[in-house]
Amino acid sequence: MPTFPFSAIVGQDEMRQALLIAAVDPAVGGVLIFGDRGTGKSTAIRALAALLPPMRAVAGCPYNCDPDSPTASCPHCAEGGPRKSHKTPVPVVDLPLGATEDRVVGTLDLERALGAGVKAFEPGLLARANRGFLYIDEVNLLEDHLVDLLLDVAASGVNTVEREGLSLRHPARFVLVGSGNPEEGELRPQLLDRFGLACEVVTPKDIPTRIAVVRARDAYERDPEGFCAARARDEAAIRKRLLLARERLPSVTVPDAALERAAQLCLTLGTDGLRGELTLMRTARALAALDGAGAVTDDHLRRIAPAALRHRLRRNPLDESGSTARVERALAEMFS
Image (tube, rainbow, N blue to C red; front, side, top):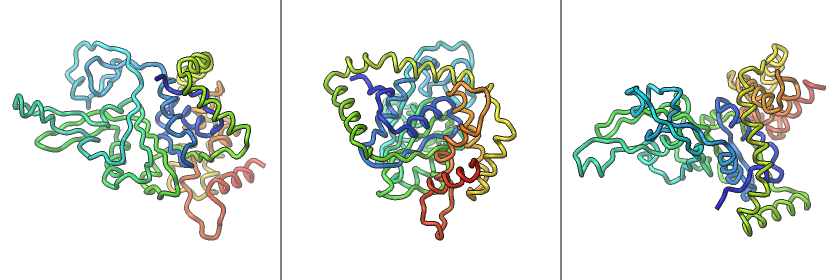
């Protein structure tokens, strides 16, 4: 069955914008999507991956390495020499909550070890996700030892395996996407800070939007091929917009005035460290590239600031308003 089209997702504009930004510039640090059940979180993530054009990868490499950019940490490609390439879909790898550490990082290939007496590595989920998306549903329920592991790999882009007599490193650069329901528990601050953008999705409150969602889903389930064919032109338009934004991104400038605005906003909100400014700058630049602009403007900062900063605020016991309201209040004061 074909994947539900990204262009057919009704509403949830902030989530769609954040996912597009992460596809344009993976350096923004991934996307966290928190909200009600049944609001299309996992559907949007798989739809985005299906929207992206196939990527070139080294033939036979279990880590999907780019043939034009040799990776020193890849045990398959480090030998050098000519590399055959092929096109493969951008991977979207699910990390189940019950996954063992061996399944995530990789382990000894027991079949080859017992059959041929050879120590060989069996790549895990992190290897499959390289240059793609690693999706964690109910990320707030992930076990602590897996959270620590993900923090290390997300920071370095390399997975190091030391077990059963094996010592191996391989590339593991991916866009981390997490979703969950805040009513089921909070996310550890260390992992929360690693996400570049945090989106809040809610169940539509108006009848026309709810009807549009139900109609689209029903039409897809009754005739998936026909529904996707009817959306092919819209999908092609978004794909073209993404590719043009990737090409345009290196040339988009961030004026000193925009950097000053970003720093002042983070200072006003009391965000810890400088990751808030860096993320705000990167995401605003990617948004400008999507818009076809040559430079970041105040409008780009205003549009992306809630998603880039809401999860970086300290709790204020004297302020009962939520983090989104605090960001919007600071934006209103700054841009009034």
